[in-house]
Image 1 (tube, rainbow, N blue to C red):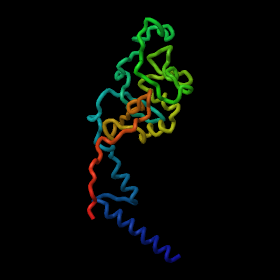
Image 2 (image 1 turned 90 degrees about the vertical axis):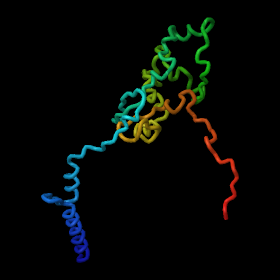
Image 3 (image 1 turned 135 degrees about the vertical axis):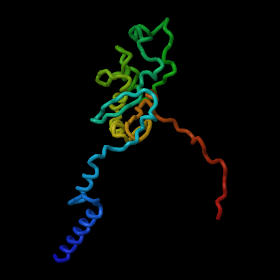
Image 4 (image 1 turned 30 degrees about the vertical axis):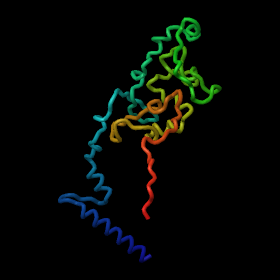
Length: 206
């Protein structure tokens, strides 16, 4: 017990010395915690910002109590608004007299028994997407569509661990959405060679 009491007394004296050493004239702290709280009373965070590095139009979104910005999407879609061409129901537009549309898109996202165009696109209002239950989803918030099947990736994205930041790591946070990196019709990344690789055989020095 004597040894334990000695250790306690020793550490208490060290703590007291540390507090005294950190004081300036007129300051009195009982503990290190008191000192930290007193010194940080007027601290309002970092002064650096990513504002000047953010390019393009952004919109604010709130998911799982986290608010951050994402790139505005609809102005980047060259064929939006869809109703500029979809002036009639889809069945009436298919057939003779109508030019073949979206010929360059081949859906490679799950199999045809699981997913087709109308799984995500709302044919009653082509200017929006729809959830699996038929709820409307704005094109600017297409990540909500992806979250239905890719819940783990969505949670990581909301937390900031998945996807790419726009601007920088300092606030304010701007995160690229799923479609900024993945082609929604063909989301798998293609395998490719590195942009630069060693083509010379160099003998190692002995």
